Length: 131
Image (cartoon, rainbow, N blue to C red):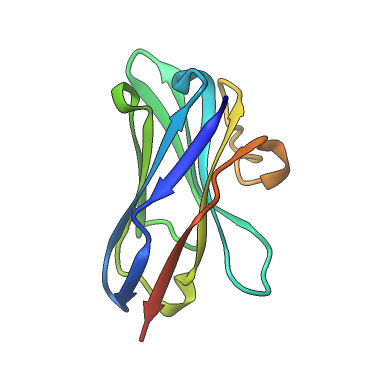
């Protein structure tokens, strides 16, 4: 049974940092495109970062332009875990953050942030940034 479990959310002040974790089970981690999305109240779900294993210890990573430079996605294949490191957080980053996965050896440079392509989702973890 496929499961994605997020953790690490919480409340921080503007300028602070958080590291989110997503532990996957029930599928081969390196065969999947993994991504982080977020959804703020009243807004559509949007992609934050995505990554996939390109072989030979090489991971390809994509970032939303709105967060580039403030987020880093990384993976621990041994632990089947993907991380999202966020720095310089702003109140506008307040949202529920979701981990997602789809069976694909390539996230797609132009489509990695299309939520419809992902068929596995975690339940989300809340991130609240206060000013």
